[in-house]
Image 1 (tube, each protein chain N blue to C red):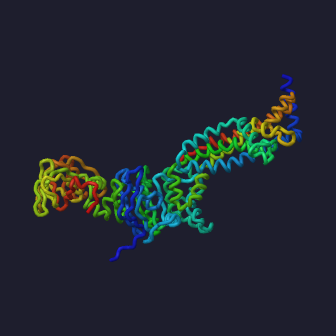
Image 2: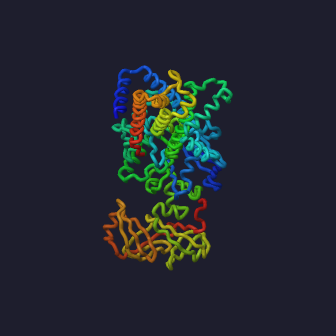
Image 3: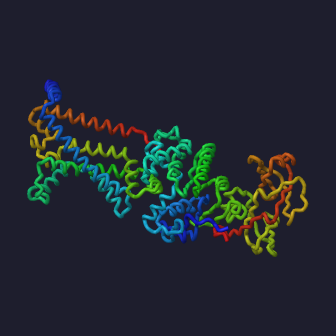
Amino acid sequence: MDLIRDGILKALHLLVTLDPEVLGITALSLQVSGIATLISLLIGISVGTAVALGSFRGKQVVVSLVNTGMGLPPVVVGLFVSIFLWRNGPLGFLGILYTPAAMILAQSIIATPIVMGITIGAMQNLPPALRLQILALGATRTQMVWRLVKEARLPLMAAVMAGFGGVISEIGASIMVGGNVRGHTRVLTTATVMETGRGNFDVAIALSLILLTITLLINYCLTLVQQRERPR
Amino acid sequence: MTPAPSLLELRDLKVDRGGARVLDVPSFHLRENEFVSIVGPNGSGKSSLLLSMMCLLERAGGSVLWRGSEVGTARDALALRRRIAMVLQDPLLFDASVEDNVASGLKIRGLPRAEMRKRVETYLERFNLGPLAQRSARKLSGGEARRVSLARALAVEPDVVFLDEPFTSLDPPTRQSITHDLEVTIRDTKTAAILVTHDASESLRLSDRIVVMEGGRIVQADAPAAVMSRPVNEFVVRWFGMEALLSGVVTESVDGRLRVSVGGVEIEARGTEPPGEEVYCCIGPENVSVHLQEPVGVRDGNVFPGKIVNMSSMGPFLKLILDCGFQLVSYVPLDLFARLELRDRREVVASFDAAAVRVLARSAEGRPHS
């Protein structure tokens, strides 16, 4: 019990004194996962909207694939991104393995299907006649799509949070493509694993508390969004 | 007098869905300031007709013309849609304030901010939405939401407004009040309108012309009085509440005069249907007179004794249902009702002119009106 008590006390001390290393790790985590989420939003919302609004052969297959992608194991993503970025791999010339860029790439691949899947669901849940109503108001196709995205903004916010929540807490891909290099690619999850292995429970607990706080905030926002009434 | 030029015209319009033809309209036109009602049973193609006119439905053939010019390109179609507004059965408001909803069509058109604000204020006022301007559209009652959808459509000041059953499921007072505001706005702004409705009295009161649809075709397009006096099929008869729809067989046909056997009773009518032909005889309630004794001077002998089996109030009239061996309906003014001392189960004599009997060949149902 002393171990836990001491750990928590030391963790709080690290947080209160704004330990530079802990802050650096947190900042990098937010940066990597934030950029990855932004990329996944750009791709996920645009492609998801196109899939939801389009009618084409094989649409069901595409939707099934996206839904499957929502549960992509991070280690599998990490493995394939590593292979692609390996010195002799197809994208080896980029030379970004074990850099934050590689982590952003891997996390984007994890988050994109999550955002895309939620986007498809959100757009398909809008009343079908809404499209006609917007076009009947004199909208161009682009204006119509933009209006629909605005109408689906609440579930799309959930997509943002689910995407971000998914990548900030994953470890498999980050450690495989980032390598947990101190001051370079070390993020909250990889650092927690390492510090636990070393028996530095105080640092591990401090990092976990930060991660927990971020996750809690995300879930709190998500709950607020979900609890908002949407009568039509 | 030359007729007003067509604002919107359809030529040889054909629409297919799932391999079946759902719309086949050789010709349709809407004139400036005209109010047209489209009536017909569910699935008769009323809404599809509206969507086709807005170029929102893929056509298998035919063309749409706006002020005489064919709407050919996507750009033409967009320009057309910006001159037409549509209100659907579901208000389909945006998740925004009432004010933003009313402004949405104007924003799409890129109206300058000052002009947009002025226009929104005008239309919030017209539809009594001023106090609700800042309220979220998600917190409106059904009637308020309909008002917002009408204000949103008319705020763009279209040349034509399409109203696809916009008053369905509203309680009568709300419906009346919204219809009144709409009517005033349409009249003031000289907007042409097409109303799809299931309410016969609404279509009669508001329309310059009534279009009857059945099976994806226009089976009748006429002034309300003409549709009522010459209903083209059973649907129209029932639609306008001409309950006296009698099924019979022509027993004699000489020089345009007919005798039709209805349940063993012979009715005189006008027409050219041959003997043996199965027909419907429609007799409008306004053409049936009620007397206490057999009247003199009734032509062609359509005089039948009977008795009152039901009475209901219709404002200045009473609607009487008479049993004369077959059912007749008559509208009797209140003063006449009092003078004749009519009451339920009272024995009376009903009469009507042979010319007032609309004979409808049963085999002709659903065919275009000649």
